[in-house]
Every structure is written in structure tokens, then in C-alpha cells.
Image (tube, rainbow, N blue to C red; front, side):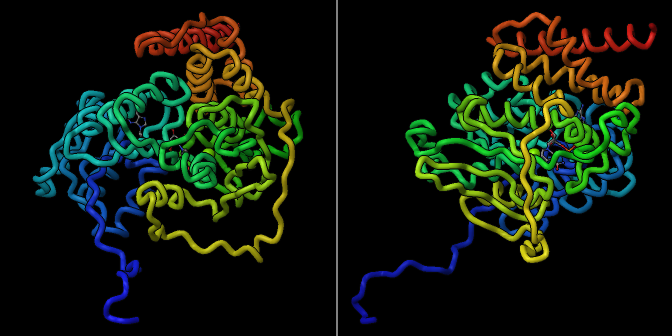
Length: 416
Ligand code: NAD
Ligand code: MG
């Protein structure tokens, strides 16, 4: 190389700007994995806020480790408890807030760049939407918020210019397999970008092979013993009914601006391929990796760069075998219900999600059987009013009505 040759690309990365992050639901399975990745990169990330429902001890330990500016508890009583524990330790730099107002504040504060939305269920909707409306980079784990209010959510992304990156492993895999233009937010439609269809994979959960007549007597602990993933209890039950795949079908329709007819659900018991995208020329791109949520979390945190996540290399030789099956709609009626809800449109998806949350909670409390879950959801879908989800209040009304119908159905059935 002579002295006058053109400048060459440098392979030494320049120091990235430090991102300020709020983790909504920091004490949950996704929240803890997120903090694990963040702790590996103190030069890149600093924590603005962490939040929890009731787990003050874990939140206190997280405050001690990360010194965020804010810690938010779900209600005043839990906030008071945290405040007292903080005073006892002499940690004075973290302000304690409470309730939905506190969550919305830390999701939209000017000083925040990135929000990890990892609260479980409908409780995550308002703070996640607040982050979207404030134009943040939103890492979306809380699929229920997109399922219940997808239309408003996507509209808010377009209006605010927020960046929405999927954390759900399947959607993160699909995103990674999408054309470059799509990843840059400049997609003229999947078909024009050469995509033929999406292959959404799921393990089939712990009851893929359980004799059908035994499903009525399975326990919450059996339902939560997922063969490949270690997750919170609600999503674990959703995986056992495969409602999780149903919610993910709806999530994929919103995230990738497509209909259910372009998405095939494939059962893949090993959870090594996290989903695939098929192109018009016959190419099928897949994303593989060990089943560890730190991979999609690290991908979305650093996108478009790549960082260490702490996940071990995939041992493809030891994996040896990858199996694929068509889903069994008789064994998993929740898959049919979710497909019907996305086809019906309107607030049917809001109703599906709300009825499922009530039914799963009742199952976890051992008030109903595992096989009652789809029966309750179908009853509510049949009887709830379906309206256009034109505003947040219409979505919240549909959510409330569906919850009331589900509770009523359970109480009546228990009283009979
Ligand atoms: P989890 O139950 O382990 O954690 C939930 C978090 O939300 C906790 O921090 C809890 O304190 C908080 N929370 C619960 N109820 C709340 C309320 N009413 N108000 C405020 N905060 C509340 O759940 P998880 O498994 O981490 O799942 C979180 C979200 O990520 C879910 O929407 C789930 O579907 C999605 N997700 C999880 C995984 C996974 O591997 N765990 C994978 C894909 C998607
Ligand atoms: Mg998933």
C-alpha cells in the first residue's frame, strides 16, 4: 500500500454511544436475562429505570447492582416497602415511583433511548404504548399488548417514528431472516421484497405426546415444565396449550404487516431453529441457536451491530436431529381459536387475549382444569361484542368486558 492510497475501511469498531435503558418487568424471566446482557456491556448501556409487580427483594438487589435513576413498583404499598428497604441500605440515588403513572413516566422520559417491554399480559399495554408514542427504540417481549391493540400500536409506531424490534425468539428470528430493506424500515410489502411466506416454529410444549385423555388432569407445575425454555408461568401455560403460538401468529401479522394465510405454523420439538422465511426463488432462511432468550435480547439491544450475550455456541453435532411436524389442531384447540380471532379482526384479538389471561390465571390457581382453558375462551369469543378498535378506550372496554364474561363463566361453572 502506498502512502497515497484511498482510505481503507477500519475493522476496529469505534466506541458506541452509551444507550440509556428502561427495563419494564425487570424481575421476570425476560427482565433478568436483559439485565444479564446489559451487565456484560457497561460501556454500551446504562439503566435509567427498572420495574416490578411485587418482588421488592429482587428489585432491591437490582438497584444495588445497577444504581438506576428510578425503580417503579406496581402499587403504593409495594413502593413503600421498597423505599424502606432502600433507606435501610443507605442507597439514596434511586427514586421510587409507583403505579401505571410511574411506569409510563419511566417508559417515556426524555433521557431514555431504549425500552425493554417485558411486563407480562395486558398490564404492559399502557407503558409499552407510552414508549412507542415517545418515539423510543422499543424491544417488544410483551406480545399481549400487540395482540390486544395491534392496530393502535402500529399506527403509533408510524406516527412517532419509534423503532420496534421483536424479542420473542420466533419474531426476532424472522426479523433476522427478513430482507435488508425490511430491517431498515423501508419495506414496500413482503411480496415485492421477494418473501413468499413465513414459517413460524414452536416446540409443541410439554404435552405434545401426552395421551389426550390425560390432559384434563395435568397440574400447573406439569404445564410449566417446558422441555426447552425456562419462562414465566403465564407464557409457560400458553406454550402448553399452544395459545402462545396463536398469540405469536397474531403478533407476526402485525409486526410483518401480513395476513395469517402467509404464515405456516410448524412444530419443531428441539427449539433450535427459531423460525424461517421462504423467498420466491425457493430459498428458505432460518435462524438457529441455543434456546436462550439472551440471544434475541442482545440482537435487539445492539441492532444493527452484534454483541456477546453469554449464550454458549450451538453444538450442531450434539443436536444431531431436527424434527418438524404439522400442528395438531385437535390437541391444541387454542391454535384454531387464535386463527379465527385474527381472521375476524376488530376486537376479537383483544377478547381472545383477555379471556386467555383469565383462564390461565384460573388454571394456575387450580380453579379450573387445563382442558377448560379453550372452552372458556371459545365461550367468551362467541358472546363478547366485537367492535372496531378505534381508540384505546374501545380496546380497554373490550378487554374489560371479555374478562368479566370469562370470570362469570368460570363462577357459574364452579357453582353448578
Ligand atoms: P414473568 O412472569 O417472568 O415476568 C413478568 C414481569 O412483569 C415481572 O417483572 C413482574 O414483576 C412484572 N409484572 C407482572 N404483572 C405486573 C403488573 N400487573 N404490573 C406491573 N408489572 C407486572 O414473565 P416473562 O416470562 O418474563 O414474560 C414477560 C413477557 O415476555 C410476556 O409478555 C411473555 O409473553 C414475553 N415473552 C417471554 C419469553 C420468555 O422466555 N420468558 C419469551 C418470549 C416472550
Ligand atoms: Mg416465542
